[in-house]
Image 1 (cartoon, rainbow, N blue to C red):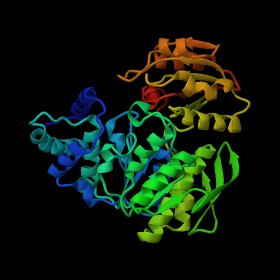
Image 2: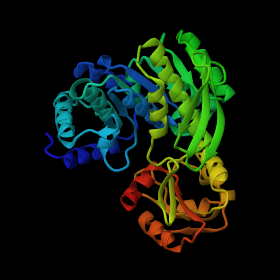
Image 3: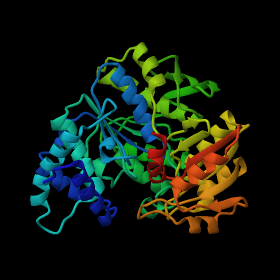
Length: 429
């Protein structure tokens, strides 16, 4: 039994040693023992390489504005596990968190009497289903896959809508090295008769998604076909675009997060919301959309955490994410002298991931973070094909050192891994 939040943290941290174990058999059995809480929930299930969290953030903001209780389950966290279980943007309270995991632990003790052990992510996913079904009942759950889709622990649910953001290479050791293989994994969330909405534009990925949707008799809504956007205006305060679809002739939307990739994420969110309005009688008025989209924020996505000195953090951690980040920087900050501090997980190819930023930055400082998947600063430094590079093993020391050197017109950019950014949170709270 757990007496404190710290007890739970240590318990979950110990589960990281089990690693990643794709497959649904363990979750099926454990959730059966819990009474299938996932079956009592209305769920929107979202997969994709990048943009899942931002899409969820837009939807949550609009639905909260419309008066709904919305549960969100995303990963990883920045500062504590409770961040992953939100209702209307508010973390689960410490007391409920302890009660939830004690309830979970009662069933787990019996379930794991044999040799089967659940992973950290499986336990958190089961906790999310239980929390939203029993402890804090909600009108809708916005559920993000952890990795891939087909074999992801979240795929145990039967949603009312599925969505896929973009598809690009990432987690190749689990999902495969080709776009087609990765698309098959992510399209694995498609369920029989359940609509799937996607902003994927890669032709190979779209062909896979379309084939699986046809096999499952799932209605497919694709960008530039059943819905679209027209990017109208862009400045440092946000983006403005016009949304249109088979349901909506034209609707002007303003968002505060920067970049065309955020316009696409918001477009996907709008289409999902419109589907819920048309087919599930969700009451979403124009004013809910206008306020909800503009008010939406998502930590660590093009986020300016300091203006003097100018510091931006971004959760980009693969090549596609870096390409989106580079495009946004060129558009909004062409005059800035950019100094990059970065750390990556060890399965990443440093040049493959960071090369979109190479033409934009004056210097790269390689650092590292505490995680079993983290690369060393030395390895990144040695492999990086970039001339102006330095090493500082401590990310906090690296940031403090560079902040002191920044002048007017300079930007400090921190990106490469959400685990890396999590270690820097105390500096910018």
